[in-house]
Image (cartoon, rainbow, N blue to C red; front, side, top):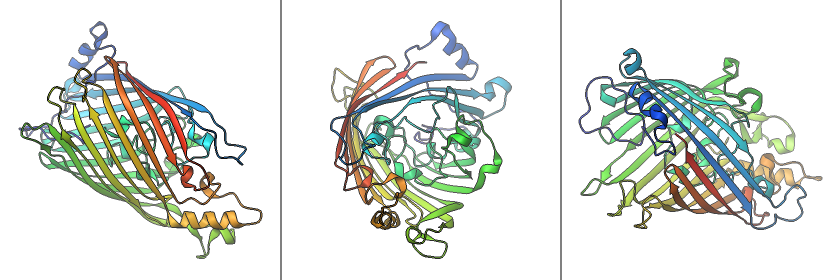
Length: 446
């Protein structure tokens, strides 16, 4: 949200902690606790997200491990933000700590897809009561023109990020477009790693940010990061260096049409295996040797969202917003060579339902050529070898369509019936299309 908020019109020249967000909640101010804490510089929020999906048709025949079924996944999220200016007089300094507790599973794997979870909230948290996501300090200088952060950070919560993505449920888009975290070292919620980030705002509606994050082995593996409290520096094997430039205009005669235009990329200096060649430059599917390692690899992104219509009868959040983008990765080391997406969210288009929203999104993923060629070689063996990425056919491309309607049930409670279609699950043409129905519920507890 900080990235997506333009600088105030007349910022001061002094260090200042920007106000912490206060979302609409089920318990707005229980026993006066929320107001008492915030007046002293402490913001405590808690929410629950739950996602259910159910397959409408049976899986492709001939695969005994596939089955038609349903799944439920969710999390409880707790965030603690502290303004140390108010507590100790440390001008411009704040800390941000985030914990999650995750549960459940996801239905898409039952149908043979391992590329995009039908329930985004699944995975990474280890099915534990408490998982540490982030814990970092942030110094805001020159009235917010400069922000410096360091500690346990989640890279993709700030780079290639948007609060609009999780208007949807499928993991191909919600959280962030899935290709943005295609590399094994890129952290996305709920994984964190040691890092340092600097953001500057040359003007009110522009920003540039860059960072250095320390690549760790097994950031999503239970053996090292099940609870998020394992700060073992021996896991560090390299660095990630992202940079992003953004323009955040507020268009329209009444300045009610915000937009976000960003372009970025990163260099990853850590050992990444080639998706086709071995150490001798031969296909490793044929030679049986270890895949060649690349010490340098990269990824890039271009993303846009723009509100194009504000409903005059709705609140400030209401209106039609369109989104589009492309993520392109190093084809030598990636699984997803590139991903493109288009989407829209229309909030408050029904006059009597100002907080409801209707949305659609379509994503397209192209698998890297080396992965497809490796699949061909593995599956042509007699007997056929097990292909990477749980593939039971040659992986080429996949498209996912999703639509939902968000119902504002009451203060702090949203329920969104959801429909998804997987065209070529797991990017395989030998798997028939799959449809899911389900729902996503979000309860902002406090």
